[in-house]
Image (cartoon, rainbow, N blue to C red; front, side, top):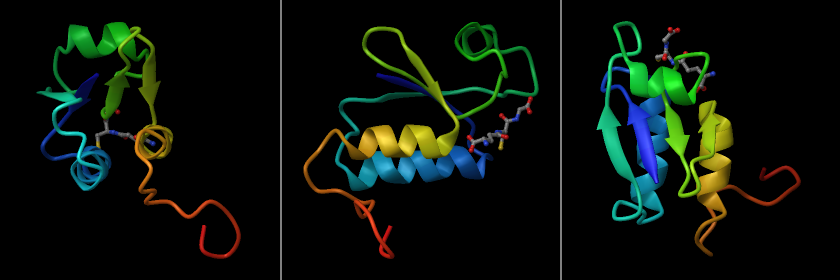
Length: 88
Ligand SMILES: N[C@@H](CCC(=O)N[C@@H](CS)C(=O)NCC(=O)O)C(=O)O
């Protein structure tokens, strides 16, 4: 997988924290970019041109940090997000 992120984006930071907490550093290549400047690779995958954007192995782009975090959380058994109820 590939993550387009920006060092100054709090949304990107949240996704990178999940990647680290889940031990997925080897599975995700993080690519720094600036969404406020010319970022053709990012824009080709996310019409909103926003970071973070995660590209799955099959090329499917995921965007919006909650969507990305929820997807990453499904990849290993040790869940960060409680499944349901008040804890969720
Ligand atoms: N709701 C989005 C917000 C993402 C967002 O606004 N990212 C900013 C950087 S912090 C961005 O890429 N802005 C570029 C733009 O608006 O063109 C999320 O949670 O991922």
